[in-house]
Image (cartoon, rainbow, N blue to C red; front, side, top):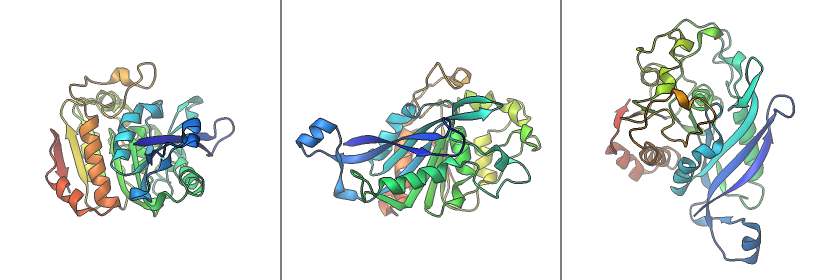
Length: 311
């Protein structure tokens, strides 16, 4: 059984645009007590505690509940999964939902000197506080953390993970490290990922959002896939995976909100990528956060209708 609870943490910025509202999914157990019935609060299942923690960063203007099915599926395999919503400045005074981006840290003279996502350390600090608070007291293994993300959330994870020693795995869907020319980079530049752990990248062949953003990077729509380029060019040597899902689109692991974000650019969803990619993510996390030999064996033979590349 998976339950969730809410928490908040202050991040950078001026009030009221300085708060991340977190949702924490965790394996739970029902006791049948009156306190449980009246509060709706369930204790964490002690069977596999303490649980490695997965912090997942949303795409721009994509609400965290869009990832509820995906987060729940990963949590069901034995992890605590954290998502969050944060309304702040996106660019040029425009505000919206954002994982939090330090634009100055992504310029040619500063990239690689600090994380591009200052929200990550704030969330990690909040998790340390939660681990000292009921009902999750002692249930979180904060020495075994994975960072994941979708779209821009995945990009900032790839640009930030190495600055946090407890991060042992990174994964992303529809994300790459190609960088906008408006920041001073040459067209088509793929930045080296700031990671020192295994990485799983996922992308659908019908990703219309990445295709529709090509001019941001000084390219045309017929360019090579930026996710594949990130896998080939941006990652250090290591135990990495690229999952290409035929017929999946940019919102393949999310329930897209037609009133927000850029789902209007997306290609058709000819296949539901969420179940297969959630299974793949869970195996990847078990292999690298729990050092599971069984998960490594299953990864070696994983298919589920997707093309897997390894390096």
